[in-house]
Figure 1 (tube, helix red, strand yellow):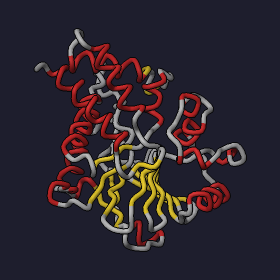
Figure 2 (cartoon, helix red, strand yellow):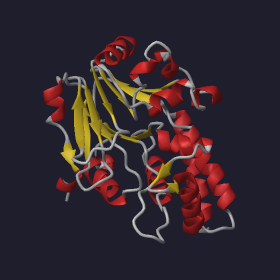
Figure 3 (cartoon, one colour):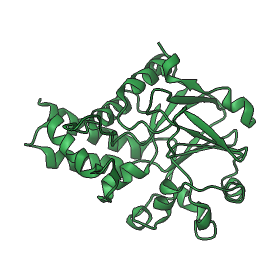
Figure 4 (tube, one colour):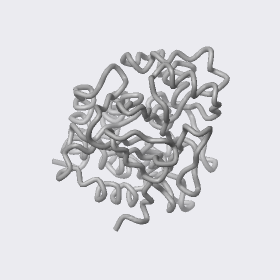
Length: 285
């Protein structure tokens, strides 16, 4: 079997497993009051930090631990002749899902959604969706690149939108902008997303692209989702994480100061105790 054949088969299997996830309720993953959820920030093709995450999680020997992955694709350019090979991390993640389907989970993100919708994003003067497709052709070869891209799109479309644990913590790639407070419907996470939700201006689009969050927004969403604290990514964090409004933690896992955050689902947290749980990737041997 060629590398392309294997990649397509893995993506197809992972796609089916995403839809069949027993924790899934519409577009929301619901974690009970036991076990642990390891939340990541954006990864953007950082395979080194991903490998550290895998070593830390030890999912094979820790069956009550879950991991949430998002924003895996679209690496930053490194050299003039650089090619975005972040599909390799996406395939690593899909393979992890196939090996451990009840413990590895995904959340929809703006970059994955942009790739699915062919929505142009420019980074460092490059169109990242085009660079990603060029990288897929380089990694998997030209012969089956169209089939590979189709399998990638189906995989992305299968991602849940958010997750919630019974101890009142909400996990998502981002949250809607504060100016959309009166237009955003929090109930969108309870139903499978349709094409309108995912398209520009749709509810899921608003959720994964938002950056400006206010106490009023967090209060409204907290009431709608019955949560006290939020953990997201999306916003670059040079030092790994930041905190907003005493209820929002923003993580990044894509740089040398990248971090992730294990949450014990049976424990009640305030913001300070939650922050104390943050683990730097650099600290994982």
